[in-house]
Image (cartoon, rainbow over all chains, first blue to last red; front, side, top):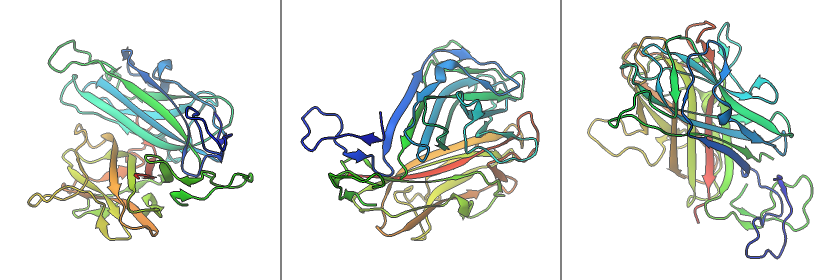
Length: 185
Length: 185
């Protein structure tokens, strides 16, 4: 798909695109995404580690002048009673945290968000969502994923399912990660 | 930029918009965004106050018949162990809470959402996300922001960073505030 769309002045009824030329400013150039429902216990990694390759999204942006709107929404369970975590959007192709990211602030991880869910007990469920209007690093095929770090070694986190198998509040569910390229010029 | 876009059949490389006629109903007319990485200790204001002017988004809508999809996504830490807060999308230009907002309900703040995060200890990290399909107040340049009130005087909240400077779970992060005008007719 291209930000420059070749259209026609006399479109046929089933022609998909009727924009002639470049997509207008502010419009979506393309959307790439995944929905994953495979259960995963991600444990409690003490370094920034990819949660799973099943969360990866591949996109080939059309211009480095555009932006990528990244949306991550996951269903999780557990995290112990003292779990505290850091997450980042990660550029697998470029082996770097997606920019913009947090400022250089001492020893802190320069990431995108931190999370500490409910701490009633180890059955806690948390939906974790985050959004970023990101820079385009390159116009060749790029793979993006989500990295996670857990400071508390007891803070195993289950993605897409509850640790407990019960009909009262147990669940299996989904994770969506989509990326939209937004035309900016 | 206009929802009614006058295009041309003979585009030049630098031409911004090439849709001929009105943007289709349901399409994005324009996208305006702020990504802020500045660290902010917002304290615990006991009235609805703007969190930071760096979070402001400016947009000039094309029609009051359209809508604004507002999305706010922030990385935070702190909040004490008993903090309870309200947030609202705020129209700086019109000095008013964005419409629609909560209905009149006694003494309650007529806002957009309330929040109480994890209450394990003062290190708690929370990502806070909210979205609103908002009414357009005017078609002249308009500035929007997010305001916050904290009921608990100990509930200081750090935006885009953790109060604690450590490599285990400390982070610096991002806040994205996106406003998209959506064509509705």
